Length: 362
Image (cartoon, rainbow, N blue to C red):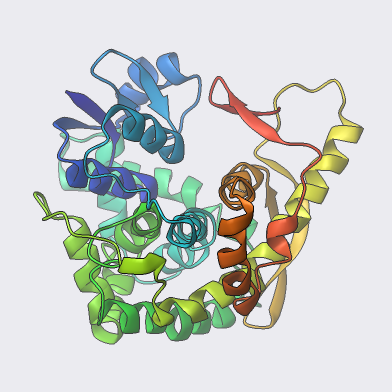
């Protein structure tokens, strides 16, 4: 039996809960209260991030990508990693995009829209789960203030908000809504890693929070239906599209992610190399290493440089670069068409790895 430590309000818990359900693995979910953080999560992982999974043999795993890798290696049934090269790469691209880029609209629509007092109650459950509503609201408001402080760090400012909303509503939701009108999942009749990457931001923040949830159901009902489908138990195992096909409905989103996210990823690798030169004695890499520019919908703003972005970038580059010549001959014209071929040739002089659930240089 697996144990999932997390919460409904947590972005990445929503991703992992859906995955465990799809895999049909027995698990119990434990709310990550202050006491659970103090007595379970911190002592067993060394960090204070959720979700955390305790495996049947007593291991404590942190970081959803590594958790899924571990479970996929243990349980090959209902595999979520496509076997064909183009679908496998597209799955990883959407997993990266969901985990690291859709956090921007997720955080904006949670903290800058009318989601209160719902959010205060939700965060209050983490502090005092068995208390009356007015006490939960009091403590929830204090905890929520801490999390809302991350909003400007992500580059969500009065200068960028209008562009973020236009991009999310008229690009992200629009194209996903068109896609899910034709397909149950990103790549056909079964979910992939990419679906679970999207599930994090699109469920906990953008579907479940009142204001963005109402927006999604109104302008992108097929996306809302996909979220609900991803949360179902005992889903029938379908098939990915034949012949390594990528639906045309995903091409605008792939083009968008290479245009907006990948310059940020490239800048991140350069910043990490510079940081290493300036801090040769440091073993662990901090979560942020300065600031850089990013652009959404043509509007530029500053944001913190997330060092973890490079770890996720490496997964995508490895997925592409480990292909043989024949597979690349198939992949390269596809990547050229969505603006990603040059980025896939990136070489990283300073690779990173995870040690004790913290980032280090490999």
